[in-house]
Length: 238
Image (cartoon, rainbow, N blue to C red; front, side):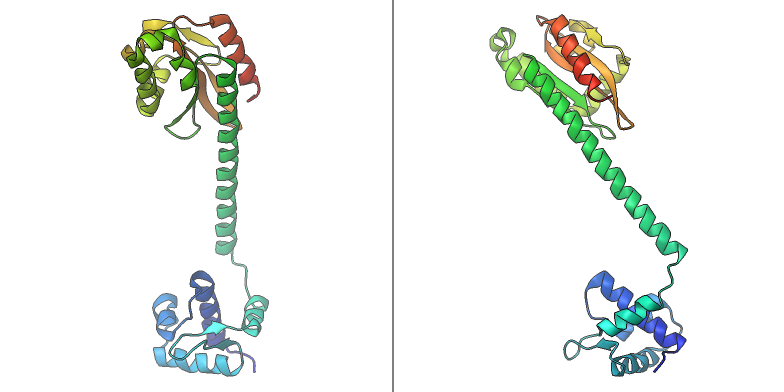
C-alpha cells in the first residue's frame, strides 16, 4: 500500500531518529521533536500501519519502533537531498580535512624539532600552529652541559619558561622574529630567568601555518653550527 504524505513523514522521522540515537523510537519522541501538527494517537495509528506494512517493527514489548530493511529502502528511494543536508555534510568534511591537515602539519613540525634536538647539544623548540603551546625536545642535552651541571636551577628555569607557553610565545613575538635566523645572546632574549642562555630562532611556514622554531642553550654554544642546522631543517617545512 502506498504511503500517504503524513505516513512518509513519520517513517522518515523514525529512521532519522533511530540513525542518530540507535534507540527504538516512540510516538512521543516524534511528537516532541518533529512538529508534525498531529496528536500522539494519530502518530501511533500511522506507526501501526507502517508496522503492518513491514516497514518498522517493535524489537520487544513496551519498546518503540525501529526500521526494517524495507523501511530503509522506501526512505532512501523517496529521500530528497536537501541543500541543508548537503551543506552540513560539506561543512563536516571540511572540518575533518582541516583537522587532519593540521595534525599532519604538527607531526611534521614535531619531527623537525626532534631532528634539531638530535643534531645539537641544546634544546630545540617550535610553537604549535593554531595553539598556544610549544613543542620542545633536548632537555637531556642541556642537563649535560657544564653550566647547568654547576647551576641546576638554570636548567629548571629553561623548563619552566618552555612550559609557560603563553609567556614564552609572547616573548618570542616581542623579539620580532621573522624569516631571518635571529640570535639573541644572554639578556637580549628578554627573559630574565634565562638571561644566561641564548636563543636562536626563526619564523617558519608550513601548509599555511606559521610559527617560530629555534634553539635554546647556554651562551657557550656553537652558534655557526646551530644556525646552519636550524636553517637546513627549516627548509624541510618550506
